[in-house]
Length: 273
Length: 341
Image 1 (cartoon, rainbow over the protein chains, first blue to last red):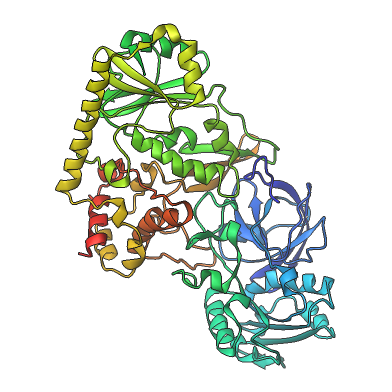
Image 2: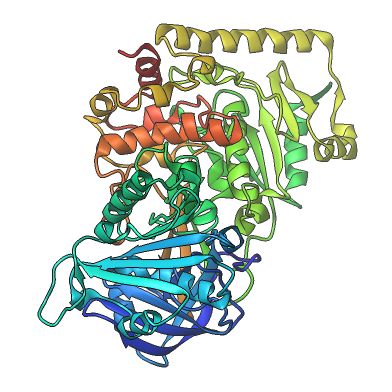
């Protein structure tokens, strides 16, 4: 939970490590000086002191209590500066905010996790949350896609994951390159996994366009609307439903999301924009 | 009901200065503004109509520091709470939205709470209406009925006094010597004035065919794809005045800057009419076009708040009408939406 006394105050945080994933995506390892734990799917606000803050979903194992990792794509003013961070630098953290994935509701079920591009980040945290409770879920499928092999994040990890007995993992790229032996094609072409769609859970996270088509696809496959979980990317700022920027229908993504069940938001306009 | 002569009201306000920062409406040309009370000057107008600036400016200031570096706690605040005098019924309705956003709705905003919790609201009846007034359409009458500590109704020689809270009652008891029992003829005079002012607002509403709020239910959803939005947004210059001047608009921007000790985080009023309001860093913008943002403004006021709080986030104060350089008139937009023209 964020600082209840002053929810706008960032917590002083040390940069422990900076790991480039791709030319535009970097993972940074952070150690907040005060307690800041999170659940998979919740988000934090990362401050570059004196410059500004931006929302990110931690990508690390939520069971690690004193550190967190955030995987960040270079897209704007704050993220550009984040990419320039070095070990030992000081940043600020606020949060965690919002609702993560309801892990208990997933117990005993077959789960299909679909990720796209940088949308991988929150899903990495979710996969660790699953692994922490391995055996509690009937079957886990992970289907991830990105544009090119060069843009694939967490390569070593996904290689390790592919050997796990509790996970069926497959990755794809929109466009292949020399040396790429994996699947080529949109992620929606590899999500027809062997499971009971009517009873299964679908978790989708990625760029808006990918989320839209993946949602249409899983609905076609027979997943129930209330079993589809989407992580909505909106312009979250305050984190507590006051500043107004991330409104989506009758909700604020920052406090009522960012993870939403599809049936709760399907009637709102603008959800894929 | 009590009565207080004008000279005694001055004494009361002088006394309140010990515990409060007292603000009163003063008239400058044909506008009214809140000014710090420093003796009962000629330009003080307790009656008339709403001030130029919305009441929210006291409790959710246009610019406010919310964090100093990583320092725990809250940045320092003013020493005394506000006592705001002459607040009109339309601004009091603004509290219903602002209080909900900042003190309920799952999380508490410590800065709003701090400014709001010990304040004193001495409201007042409107004694006239201006041509932008349309409070009756939103279920408000031009005299306060709730959400005040003390209400003043201008009458011959002074003001009729009603209390609306324990705090108000205690204050009137404490300064009992300044008040007398209200005479029946003054109460009659007040009632006649209230009827007269409401009549003037009613004339505005009739002349402009402003729909009553009972007709607004569901109208945003019904007209979501209407051409009215594009048409109304044609002249908009994206200045955001309608937001900043509105007593219910609450959106803000967190803005970091390098301060004396490293970092200062400010929050400033923001406007949902500005292009980047909902844009995400990745570039996606759910409301890329201006007319979508105009529609969103109405959606927030007349669809979102009715759904989550059973209240229209408009008070009929008419400030946005006066402030708009493009002459977009909220009454006209509502009329068009209801009539679908």
